[in-house]
Every structure is written in C-alpha cells, then in structure tokens.
Image 1 (spheres, rainbow, N blue to C red):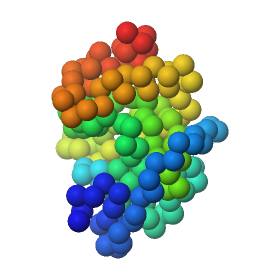
Image 2: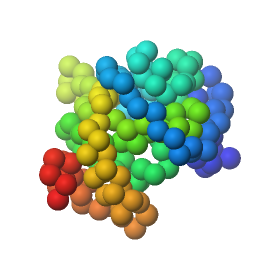
Image 3: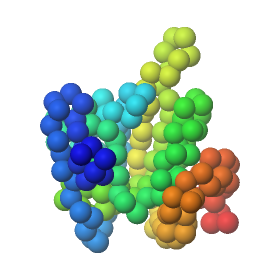
Image 4: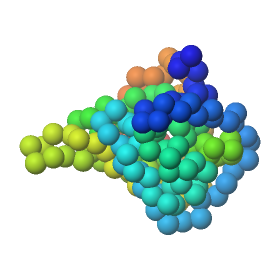
Length: 172
C-alpha cells in the first residue's frame, strides 16, 4: 500500500496522509523564505511557519513525514535523483521546483539545499530554503522538466552536473 504516491506515512505518528490529486491552479508564493530541515533520509524534522502556510499542511502532518509530501507529479524523478547525489556528496544544490499544496494546487519556488554536518564532518541532515522563483525561469524549467519527465531520463546528466545550474542561469 505504501507504494501509492498519494499516500504518505508519517514516521512519528504512523498517520497516513492522503495527498490530493493535482489541481491545475497556481498559488503564487508571495515572498519571505520557506525553510525545512530533514534527517538524512529526507524525513522532515523542522518546517517554518511560512512553509506550513504555503503548503497547507500542519506542523503535526509535516514533522515525521517524507519531504515528498509536497512533491508535484510534474517534477521529473531525475531532478530529485540528481539533487540527492549532489547533497549526499556534501555539496549545495539549487533548482526550480514545482510543489503541490495539500489542496492539490501548485506553486513554484527556487530551492537551495545544503547538508548539515556534525563536528566530524558527517552529514546529519539537510536544510532547504525557498524563495520566489522568477517567472521567466519557471517557463524554462517547466519546458525542460516536461521534456525530461519520463523514467528514461532519470539519470540524465543535466540533473547531476554543472549543466543543470548553467541551464537554470542561461536556458541553454
């Protein structure tokens, strides 16, 4: 049952959270910074008020849930596979992400993720900050993601090397 992408299980409460079907209605992120922290498996350990307000999920729903709780199905798997490869190697990742709110509506953000390291330089989690995404960059990212959405693109190098960051800056 947990292979259903519309059901998220909270690792703390055991509660099953049923995600909405996507709704083709955008909610514009009005600014500020949305911040989350996760453990090394991507389970949310902290979500600031702005993130909770924007996603529509409560603190109790978010803390202990996998960060995929707000993943929009339009996002290519390769983007997240590349993100994990980069942040797991103690590097910072930046990218445009289309997320889905609890009500199924979507929003775009520019996300910055970096690892949190302990005193022994071991990764103990990750911190992500989100800001307003530029409209022209959303158009470019949306077109790229539609082109690279299928499983056959899961290991596309654009998501794992400097070409993704370059693409985000130049559209080429």
